[in-house]
Amino acid sequence: MNKLVCIIPAQEKNNYSKDGDLVSWGQSNLLAWKISQLSEVIGAKNIFISTSSKKIIRFANEKKIKVLKRTKIKTLGDVFREAGNKFKKCDILWANPTSPFISPKTIKKIISVYRKSRPKDGLVTCVKTN
Image (cartoon, rainbow, N blue to C red):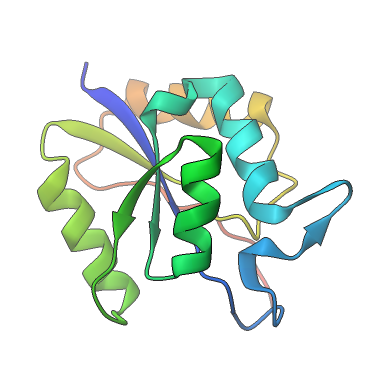
């Protein structure tokens, strides 16, 4: 079984909010909430934030979360390839801060199903819209 790492793609501005993944979420923000959920499942030492934002890098450093610094604006495909090259012997769980309702229990189930199926590809969570 490969080691599991989690990558959170995060930016300080996005289509959802001018505050991006740092937008307020209860007493916290979306990024902090996602880190909290994932820490419960896989532990903080296996979490990485992929970003080009200096503000998010400072935030990650405060939370003691490792950063995969993007050197320039890239497509999501480029971000996936870069992570795949860095973590060749690992299973990668991608977790978006903009999906705050995916509970730790659900994340554990996703990981379990993924590992049992041993796909050649990966798993991405999404919501079907019309």
